[in-house]
Length: 216
Image (cartoon, rainbow, N blue to C red; front, top):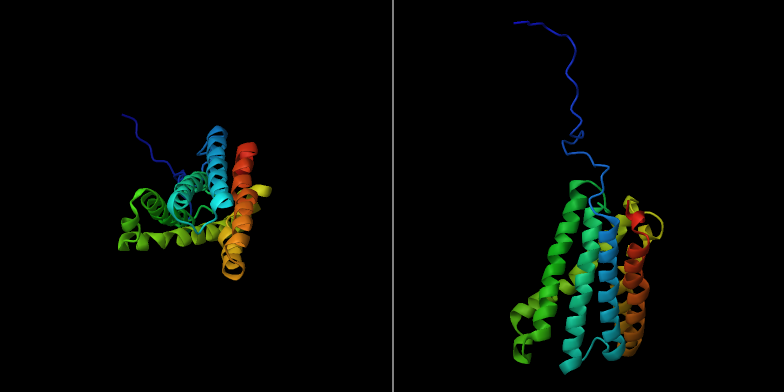
């Protein structure tokens, strides 16, 4: 049996970074076709909710209220599609904090979606229960979370061209609409809110569909 001693140093490992985390692979984690489908989902859900706001506003009762809840649920499904693209393309960065940020937002959005579903289908007495009152808080919290993600995404610069900045435009919806509602009332916030959804989220979905390569 041959045996020999070598003085050649062992090769350094290349499967970890200095922080001990695996490096980012050059292979995309999501295909352009999937991004296009998710972009269309965002646009469709946004247009559904914008239509409800144009028709009935955001403060209503009866059928109009339930229609608003359920179209709002469709919008939230579209935001889930957006969040999926952001997570799979590591849009907010590759650090652990950046990944956790997206997971926390997914939880907030899921709880807000449960409120939309239950408030849209339960009979009126149950709509005012304590559980739904708690879940209702996650609607604004989820939108605040998306706003923070929009800022982080713009700073990270991993999405390019208009897709770097358009999430920040889309996710300013509450910042623009809520003060208008407080100052000018329902009519002003109805038209501004619906129009902002189309300019922001619906257009963002169209950009993802048209230019998915900008998420690389």
